[in-house]
Amino acid sequence: PKYNEAIKAGIIGGVILVVLELISDLISILNIIKPEDITNGTNVNLSGMGWAAIFALCCICVLFIVVLIATGALAIRYSKGMLRDVSDSVVSSGLAGGVAGLIWGVLAIVLRMVTDLIKPNYVTIGSRLGSSVASGICGVLCCLPAQIVIGIVLAIIGGAIYYELAGKK
Image (tube, rainbow, N blue to C red; front, top):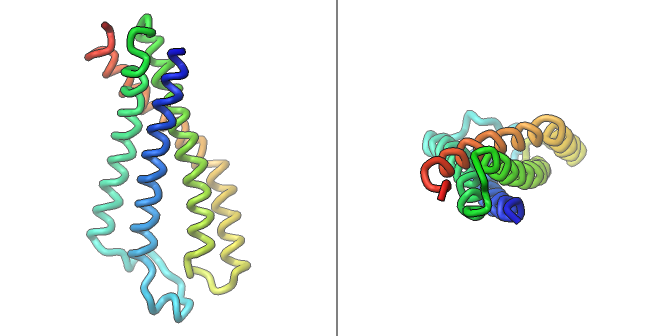
């Protein structure tokens, strides 16, 4: 039962992370693509991004960290009374972080693949499709494991802090 609560906290954290990822992708797309790029079919790059967009993306990166730490704390809060010691809290919060990282990672890969298909960076649909497939493969091999590990580590930190401050009762 205590691990069911951790999974529930992980799902909540994962959904919030996906929403943040979607906002981040939208900021990137809307600030990189200009109407003349769509009509000309020119190659678009990050140099067209404004400072406000860069600042917003940096804030979202901080929010990713905060959400993962809070996911670990939420797992401890949900399973309060069922945890025997700190090691239980580490397992519970780590599980929550792993679930959140998995949800975030999988849906971020899908978002990146869709984004590559709709961005006018490439002139032909074949090159867009190739980029989308490459994003998916890279995401599965590199980004997904990193997002899961980052989720676990940050959630354990949040869970341990919450357990020591409020969860011992």
